Amino acid sequence: MKKIILDFSETTKNEIHKYLKDKFSFPEYYGNNLDALYDCLSEISTPTCVGVFSTEGKDISRIIQVFKDAEDENPNLCFIFSKIELN
Image (tube, rainbow, N blue to C red; front, side, top):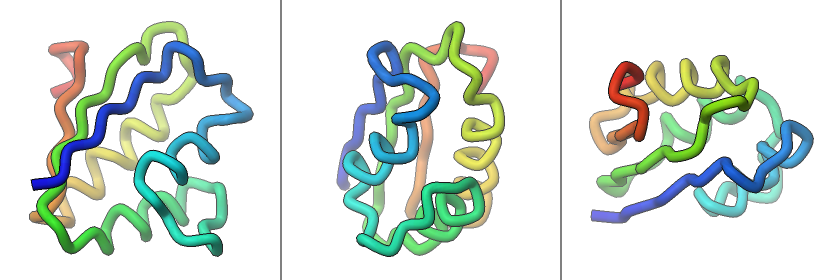
């Protein structure tokens, strides 16, 4: 199983898609938007567990929703959030 840790503590809103592209090794054609994020997450074919940390104070609620939607769609994907209420 592949494990990815996302720590948004040092990431600004303008850097989030670049950060996600790097952490998930998305292809060069990744579109840096929510639709592209969902598409790439939905295509992950290796069992992957993602820990998501330091979301407090970040305006990433739509990204978190994309994570949850992709997890529902893709059986190879699992997200675990540091904030209990997000799980």
